[in-house]
Length: 208
Image 1 (tube, rainbow, N blue to C red):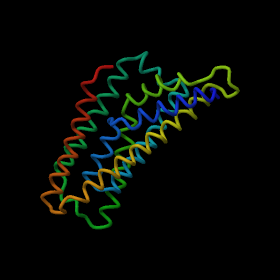
Image 2: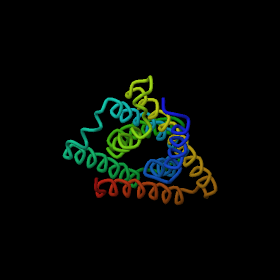
Image 3: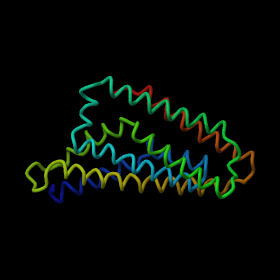
Image 4: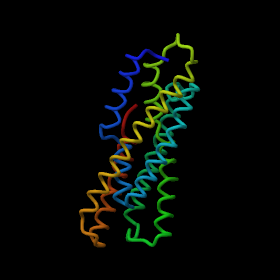
């Protein structure tokens, strides 16, 4: 593995990236606003698992295909953007958030499945791992490069997930202070939908 100095720089850099509000953090907060803390945490879990697809791809060198085939990158990006926008629109059309226990469980599972899909369809994550992880790989180390990439990617994913959990808990605290009326809930749900639509539009319009 890389030297202690390199690993320290890796940890500090990753933490900085993780706690700067980004799309994943905003997405998790939006799901919390729309469906409560459980939905937010399930969304974070979905993002976490979905990211492993990109880590495996980076370790196997598959993420380089996005650089070699720009059309593939654009296609996946637009698919992910369209999915985010569709999720945002669905929140506008959703009914009252005050559900029975069974519906809450179903909503949590739905948030998990949708979040896995969102993360897998986000080529920005693939590019991030491909660009970030190799900087901290030691070609002279005993571990093969693919193993180092897998380990470093897992550490990055765990740190980012921790930051996303913090955003969910903070969003939940803010929501708890709001009056639990149907009017306020509808407004909060629409705010969450607006965030998702905005994230989708940003992803679609962002270059590279």
